[in-house]
Amino acid sequence: SKIWSPSMIVEKRRASDDDITFTFAIITGSSYSSVLSFGLVTLSMRLQYKIRCTFDFSKFPLDVQRGCGPTFRMFTEDINLTVFGILSKQPVVPPSVNPPEFNLLNFRTEIGVETISATIDHYDYTVNISRSTMSALFDLERIPYYWLVFTLIPVVLLWIVSYVGFYIDPLQAAARASLGSISILSLVTLNAAVMQSLPHISYPTTLSIYILCTMGLCALHLVMYGIVNYAMRQTKVLRQEECQTQPQAAFLQTDDCADHDVSDHGKVDSGVSPTVSSATTGKAPSTVRAFVDNFRVTLVKPLYQQMPWRNARIMEFCIGLDQYSRWLAPLAFAIVSGVVWGVSS
Image (cartoon, rainbow, N blue to C red; front, top):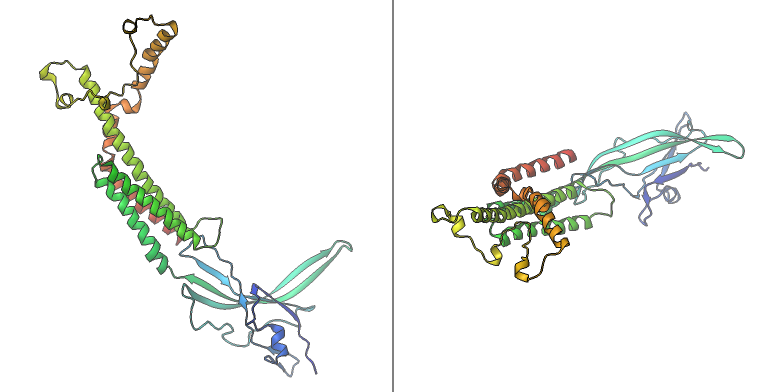
């Protein structure tokens, strides 16, 4: 006699020539059935499938993919007549060798019943379909050793290279700019390599956020150096202007005034361009020229003198940013690292 078998589908399946399907197991005789005295009929078989697993890379490289595995659904008219069941204590057998980048954990089997309601609009009739389901699930935990050695440690080292610049003389512009630029460019390349190793996703990962934050801190190091370098040059200009307004008596001359250079590269940044005297050119100034000169002297020059870069105290404070950054920069980097990886874990 023949035994009726229900219709069954497998979700998350990837077609493969190595699959042992439900139909193949019955046809080849690799399944066996039994009939108990009280009328229960069991059909047992070994199935083998390649499956798909949905990955969430938002916490990469500390991500754990949960609920991987196939789901079997069996359709029947009466859910009380045909259901899935577990005949062994270990229905899901773990592989003998784990993938090189993952640990396979938490093997489990979940059995349940689902009811689907379908409405036929033409007849205004609702059909309830019950199906028995069984899921053979496991979790994938990524081993972060590779990303720790080849990504996280280089990121920290590049930040240290950029941080060393705070201990170099601000007047050495080439050295300071090179350290910051090399660190930023290296981080850009490293971030691109990480993203190329992942599928094309439309959301950030923990590792990419950490690299971008480190890149921003290194860029801030460059910005701080630019402020310090400009403040040092502007302070020199302000001192030269002060020397020009002092009496020219020798006993009032300071070292800065004695070193004052009146060549082109030492011109004072006064904010007002020199005017040409009418006596020199032999031409009477026009009404428009007189208005422009008056506007420049009465409004532009006083306003320019109130700018922050015309304040010697502010410029001296900016020069001291190098000293403050030597302990503020490590504190900021530690806070960013703790927040990024703390949220991820």
